[in-house]
Image (cartoon, rainbow, N blue to C red):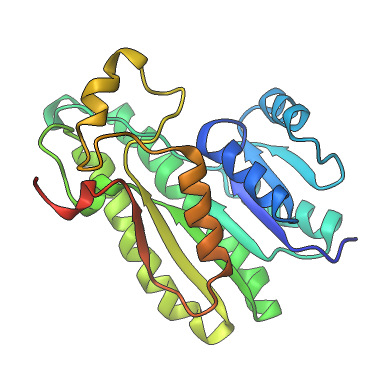
Length: 244
């Protein structure tokens, strides 16, 4: 059992999630990471260099049993859960009339159901301890839709995540639990084709895409900001401020 703080991070094996794992470990946290593939988590663990402070728990985050296992294994290994970062998700832009029923189900499973189940499991434990934090990874386009990025269903779901963040912040405040969200713009991850870089750079007034480290900095700020709850923090180079 450890006296270090412990955070659960979903979608932890690559991209922003892996960057968040590295950032929290470097800050002295224990981390319990979730992804669908155990091999992906094992590969991530090999890059981290903190064998005593990282546990990978594979499973579909849309299955409530996965969230229960994450909390149970974190408590068994490290004694408690201090924070949850709901990072698991994917972005699927396309014209509205082209979304299929399968697209909708996949977006709901990963981007909404997984967030709800993980938050329920973590919040129940945090309420018993009267402390904790939950940080949801939303999307800048849910704050300010962009005609160049048709994404009505992600906007629908991430917009709901933003409002749930605010509602849950109110509900959990009496238990000393903070609930906030980070809303990334276009971030430099392997999901983006380098051939599209010029187009992506021009989607924000800053004239560039963001970095994973910049998202991690925002998440770490909210994890430590004891008087901030119910905030939706854009990290998007000004993309959500309006039309420019």
